[in-house]
Image (cartoon, protein in one colour):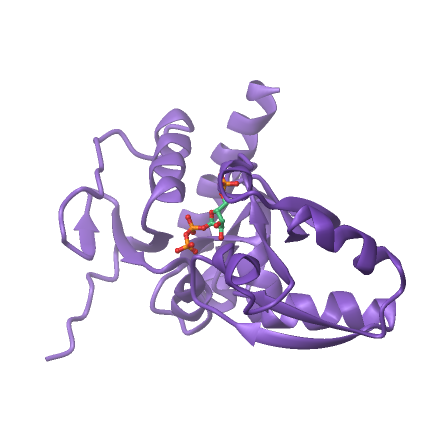
Length: 218
Ligand code: PRP
């Protein structure tokens, strides 16, 4: 059975975990919602008085928004650069702030900077990796992983990784170092292009509230 969500409410696709809590926090502080919304249960659809929140994997948020299942969503630059969805991106939410980097064991630094012609790199971000090394004119053999990417240099799967670094704890605790910076990343509010036109009466105030909240935060 296909469940049709009540069309009067906006549908929001959110990644589970830290970004979920931080987005709810912004929605509350910006006066968009007043209830306590928690993702602690196993439910994948959470209903509030004005919204449906869909709990999805971070990488899947653009898919739900681009296909119009969700009107809006929250996705990091890392995810957006990888899938390049056709969505409107009106607001930098300034949460989920991290850096996309090349990392490896300290002894791998020298080889990296000695202008190698090709490198082996493990990553959850094959497109970002290929684009970055392509621009440098370095051939790259990408090994795609789905998590625990820091393991790869420790066991010899590849000398280098491309991954996001937030606190730096995972690199530190595994004896790895940042070797090169690719770019910073933060979470963006993304909006389905059709919803942006047809549900403007609901979406414009929401976007404005977030923007005003951010101005007052500075
Ligand atoms: C991400 C990322 C790093 C870690 C960085 O992994 O891939 O492993 O967080 O955060 P830190 O700098 O604060 O340590 P995630 O927690 O998404 O888990 P994963 O290994 O399953 O991808």
